[in-house]
Amino acid sequence: MAPELCMNEPHNFKVDIWAAGVILYKMMTQKYPFDANNPVALAVMIAQKPVENIEGASATMNELI
Image (cartoon, rainbow, N blue to C red; front, side):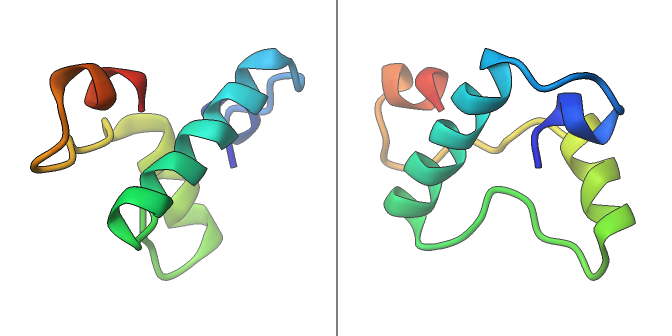
C-alpha cells in the first residue's frame, strides 16, 4: 500500500512508482521493505518510516528504490 493510500489520498502515478519500488526491493532482498503484524501498523510504518538502504547495492540503486 503506497503512502498516498495510507493517508487516504487519491490514486495517481506515484502509487504505481511506489509499487515498482517495492517489487524491486523484494527482488533484491527477498523481503518486503516494511513488515508489521496488522494493517494499521503497516500503514503507519509506510507513512512515517523511510525505507532502509540495501546493503551492497549502489547509491544509485538505493536512491531509485
